[in-house]
Image (cartoon, rainbow, N blue to C red; front, top):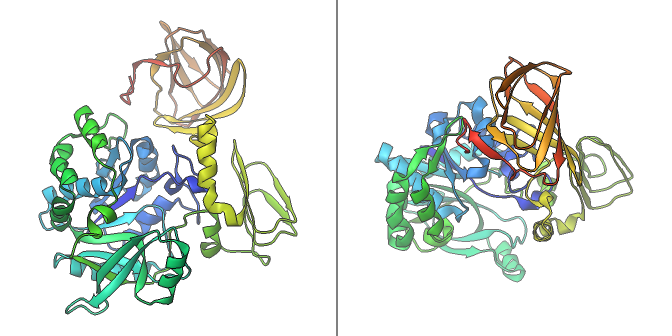
Length: 476
């Protein structure tokens, strides 16, 4: 079996930890690893890393590869989408790539940001699903509902599949029912949550896309032919301009709507492996350890007389007194405080933040870059203070700024600085000033990380005021 991990979500309900440019699947929401790392680790007993593929947004490609490097994930097995178009196109494109390698390829499709408590049961369910997939079924795993959930899709099971115990024909799909309907489903044993895990032959899903979503299917071969290795390091697969335009012009359909609700080949396998989609902060109640008062507390937190609350600190101390059923989540540049019962509405809150043009809605004050990272420490009307870390052997682009000057002080490591026609070697406590409109470049010439403090001065202090002349990451 091949594995295709879908990792294009934004996870705005987990703001301020998850944001558009560094979403939920890349965060440590449950446990010491990020959610995408947990997903890969969970699959490796069944699917070797050389058979794993991943589809994500181009903005998250570099950080995703960084997080999966320790697993030996192949960088050219990551497909970077130019825009978000739901799951049907992503799955169809992955199927096209796999069938070109293996005409009989069976592919499992997995969300990148779910929790599975019992991996052994999960793997056994996938093995049963693979057997059915080889018979040209479209297999989905169903979870018995434990509450009337209006945020999930439901599947009604029909008759048992001939010759396969524990597998049933899918009789009907219902996407996010209202509360009275969800309560009715809870009373009947033949309704299951759709957990978004699918297993099928690549050839079978392509046949069904051709039958039920021909407008998408007809363009998949052209799009696949437009894939190329990116200039980023390490190189992932991205679309050229023609492919990107075509991809973005297609309808954004889920695979459920495009195929599963229409196909007569769909089979459901009920399976209980401790699944949770961890869709909002209050979902941590089901998957995290609690103290004697029902609190989930992590980070630099002092909580007294609090009950049934989620309190997550970052660097500074969070002192909480007398809270009940409350969510408090701190980050370097934003703090969330909300009633636990309103956790689902955090998404609406982020929409308001974005509508107000506040940068905290989409991006962190800290940003990962292919050469390292930077963190905004302070800012004012005419200055910006950053901490910049450059990885060993890495170098920023040769660039200039029209509206600002920069002053660098080396904190640790060895810096090689190009300023105009001059080259400087700097060590800890050395400083240099870069005037506006001057070509310059910063590189790490040592074996250890380079850390510098940068102070920008000017009347325009944003990431758009960069003119690049040379860049090893293809950003000119």
